[in-house]
Image (cartoon, rainbow, N blue to C red; front, side, top):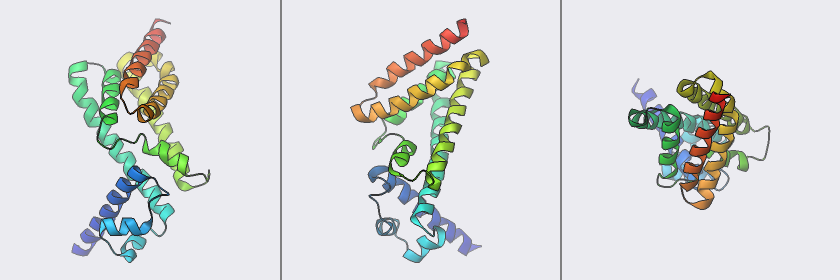
Length: 193
């Protein structure tokens, strides 16, 4: 039992280190040797858990998705207490994330840009993640304003994807306020129709 616990600790340390380095520097710029050194693990340990860098990339994307879900769940819960609207709470959480130290945008957008191969397992996972994220946004809109307003979800999803990129380029969260206001206007228009 003790050995299994140590193995999972090593795997977790590799995942956390690779996630941090990939996010800070990019998938292709970070080599396996750097991950091994910073995670303080043996090369054999890394390859035991992740037989290739591509498998490590996929595992990191899966790990990142869980982290993002947990972040948004907690941040939205905090904001919703005073905002009384899940959609407003979502945009407040998005703004919190964009103002966090080391913010480099969406790890999934970044990964897709770097993974030129459309058949790479990471590319497929990014597509699936983005579909799940759009479903998440649709759920927020439906819960906040009813099913009729969910017609605006695809446009709001595009706003969110674009505003994350814009926030990185501008180095400012200002565009998030613009996107929030546009999203709220869209769902209000859908409610009226």
